[in-house]
Image: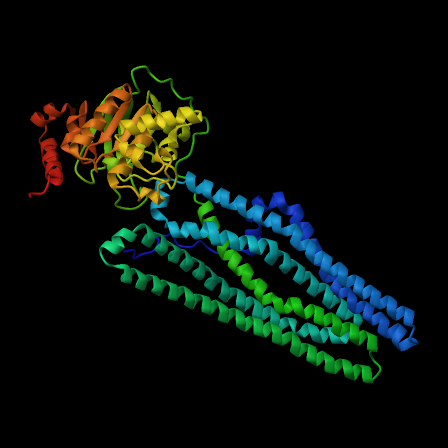
Length: 608
């Protein structure tokens, strides 16, 4: 049952300033910037047109209405106001039309860049990060950023400009009233600062909790068989409900924080406006202010108050976007531990008799910077001769799987070298290494796709018919005859992670995937553990006939697998302590005999 959502998720980085966020987002905004700018200018134009209406009213009141009642001038002014309203509506529509598409384009590019970076990051990163956290970053966080880029950021600039221009117009209309109105800016600025400091912490907490909740759903769905088998569904539900309640509590705190500032930002301008109204009436009564000026002032104030009251929502959206951006860049700023060389060597030509794999002085340490870390592989030397099948034997936890991961460069040695046909794998492009090496894992992972697509995952450059023939041959070698009995045969779409198949069926499809790639080096991490001994013998014999000349390194967890190898290497305390034929090691290597006895006991059939 999932208990710690996401496992060990790295601590949040220091929040970035909004300006830094915009600067970083410029990579994806630059291609669509012209349309975003035009949309923003449309929104700004609409706001400025709204500010122009009070000036028309000022002219009408001070001129035609008070000065003599010129009907044609009043009609003209009404027509001008109507025209300004139509233009304002058109510019608002223009903003929406121009910005919608660029926003979704930028979101798509960011999402694609994130996925590409996730594919490039090493396995150690994915072991450390929770799938739900990465999923929430790639979906909800980027959607939040898109909404902010196309609305929040634009409206924040437009609102600020509208307030500044509006206040300037109010001061030019009546400077005493304008100064009184400006006094309201002091509490508004203070409230905005306090709100920003409080809300940014809550916004980040809410997004992290949402990621944890997504992780719990992901783990529970993947482990649904275990939860059902052990009757722990209610416990999983209780834990999920607790996490959901924590997220609800955080969202309520967010809403309360936002409601307080929204109330204040709505109240302060209205109170100040009431004070200016009283002052304006007093000035008009004394003849110190024209009626038209008062009409224009208060009409302008009504226009300015709207963006001021909207400031709380825009600040909240900005803080949410900053939290989303921080989470996005936390992943994007993670440097891949494995990189291609600046000047990669060409792929060595394939020898006719098979490739030679050589591990020399190999050290491997996880968490090398942590005090007390020890080498999993400690000065290991091993040579797999061209075309031979070498079985790797050792106790559980001896580092067998780690050693196999070095050959296709899923991880790098801490010291020493891994060479294929005399070339260090670190001097080749990772894609070239993985084109030469295919691997099948003990715990196979299949994708929700047709069987053929799963099998042909490592095959490139073949036509459709030729690829299908290759897939069928690989399935035959892997003894995956059950595929023919599936509803659509090789075209049958298997469920997520292949869980619609049995463990042995998944292993055979995964083995067929490695075989179909026709690699120079085949690395097998006990991929036949779910098969019975007789089926394993058939599969191994077919592998020998089809992949003659392919160098194979296989982790053996069963004595039957050991006996079928050309040679056996014994891994003990991070070193190879013996290499030879099965019979030779039985006679000369005590630890080998001990390991075989342990393997035999582990895989012995229970007494009936």
